[in-house]
Image (tube, rainbow, N blue to C red; front, side):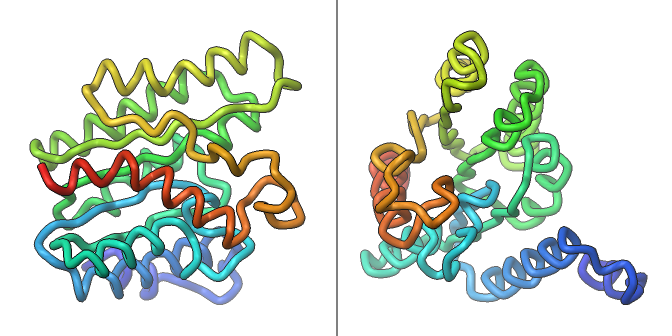
Length: 222
């Protein structure tokens, strides 16, 4: 039985937690997108930034990338797999599920919630490496893009430095493409974020999409 059918078959109304609702929404959105996939697929595995928290998801950066690809007539489909509150550990747990169908390019945009929770970065690094290893085991030709993040200075100089350098170090070790900072030009700018000051508004996501596109575009023509 497929995962979506198994969930529905065993679900009771009283067990519908907010996280389960989010997972189900992601599952149905993924299935809907998969039905019209082209031969090559770009998977965005991420957290609330990838999910477009606080805005209409159609304005989130993965969907902006999808529209750009469609406009250019490129033979790629886009599957957003962002889940609000997701950590690197959570991403590793659901990676096999979201990669059931072939993936040509995997964009990993995780770790921000690890940093905000002060999780040991050796664990975060291990989880991100685990996602990369799983992707390459399933699809040896997959191209990996790692989206870097940064933490505010109040978490301590040592932690923020280790966090910042973790992404380029992982990218180099795995010969992966690197987006140095996913929120470049957006983070900390009130005009480009929703009221919480953390998540981009539609204008912010437009800039994030351009930041991602600069790294992603060369991979689409190789």
